[in-house]
Image 1 (cartoon, rainbow, N blue to C red):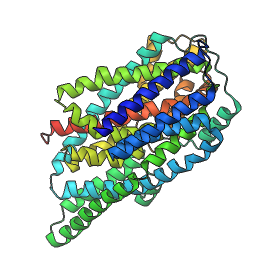
Image 2: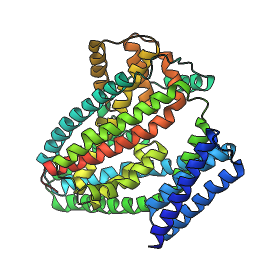
Image 3: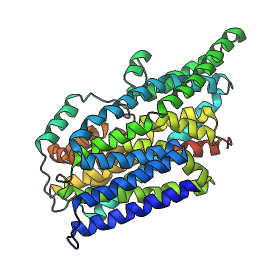
Image 4: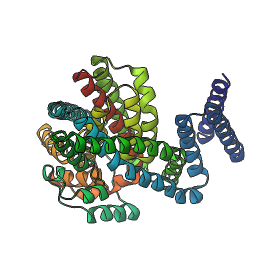
Length: 451
């Protein structure tokens, strides 16, 4: 009850601050800046007290997110170095992913010796992924054509965006959707964090282990894999204790770096993207959940923490270990979670595909070019292929955007200006990626009769 009262008090003070801040910005009333800052930090103090009483990691993550925003806004120079906190967290998470996926998939396949189910799950997953991501592309197109956010915009990239774009383009490598699924060296795949390659190696290893006739040798590897799996989940618990600091650091850095001066013409693009993402969740994911009789309250409780981490860090990988654990706690078998969720990270990027179609048309509008329906369909077909299997590539969405815009005969340098608000948009699209993949895992488990 005390926690509820603290939450109510926190929301009340934050609400009062928001109203006074808005009135002050509109020059309706004049309020001294120290009063506004004091009110804001008083609300955050109440929020910290609430998190202490709640004793819940999700509460700490959400509170840390607001503290990070406040730090980035009030103390930008101090906040920028705090990015190191999120970088440390992401490094630790990356050390978990490969051994966790390997151990859970090997146990799931060889432990049950149900090799046919792997093929069945793979086919169902790919069909589901293709349908949902295609719908996401269409919603992105519809949203940007509805708002016409790019019409009349003057996209002028600043020096910082040009430098960042050139850095990303310099590390661009040729991407073969089919070939890049297969690992040439598992150690290299682990180092480069190529999730899909790790998944494929683990599946083949699990199938090979299932075919071993010598029970003693087979059980020795299984026992090791089961032990490794348990250890990695405990490892995840330890690393997740660092999550609030990482989230706070990531938000502080983002707010301090983004600033408000660069928004201008791009504000409508950001609003269109978030509106489209919300529409996608409400009009596509929620109905799918209703069709498979998803226990929504249980599901929301399970994904709140990983989605919060994904939003603050703009990294789907950061949320993967916790998402796997939470979905398993929901009652979805580990073998399905370990197969569908990481595979979806390469083939079911709902938020990213929606963003790519929307941003491509935005650039065309800003360039004064009216794309025909045929050209937009052609663009969708290109994106359906190029957006797959690049989850492990740094700056992948920007690289795909540049190549798509170029294929349409547009000036690719127009995309550089979008980097000014890319961090803000990345938070939204990454969160939807995680939500979509968590739902896909439940859907496949439902089709398999496992939940």
